[in-house]
Length: 273
Image 1: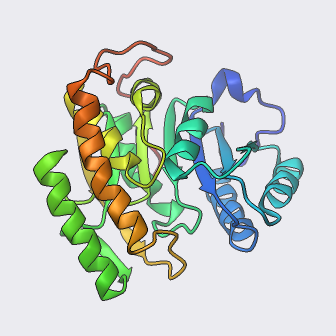
Image 2: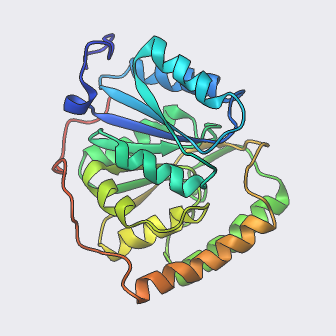
């Protein structure tokens, strides 16, 4: 899409360059600002795009608000889960519905600003990796507002276990801003089994086993005080999920061979900085 044009007269299923997947649960207040910021930023880039909001059984006005937004801008759609299924379930559903040559998922709070997207797209479009993930653990990242100390400690402890039992060498598996080539995303997310917060680890575990190249990217990051991760119950589930990932691998529930190819992965002109 040329600079300054819109998607109103474009068929996204034919020429979508980027898909942005945003899982949402009771985000009526926060989502309007998020969608506007994403739309405004991407509208100024030389690409076609779609935004997919996956509502995870919200009980507020999240769905109605998102549908109104897309009615006026014609840049995306809302997928509605019948009930609360989990962040992992919602991201998987959104990704598997995505049409873009590149697919990124982002938390609704934009803790990683959408403006950081270009940092993830550059190595993908250049062909130097298949998966680009935002990393708070990278020494060049700028943490503008930090987490509370006990949440930070929880994250660091979990990462030690992740590196021991799942994906050694990756400093931050849980940052909610990850980008994939379409081909890679369709393979990885079709194999995903976990529906909760540990799905990131599972996706990266499968990617490693399938010999995809993963690159951690330094980003700016701003902690949102409205975290949906429960310090006790979700931490316990995430620890159990590490065992589930290894068990799934052991009993052959993951296929490490690609089964669907939509777009070829080849170097393209760089994303505009």
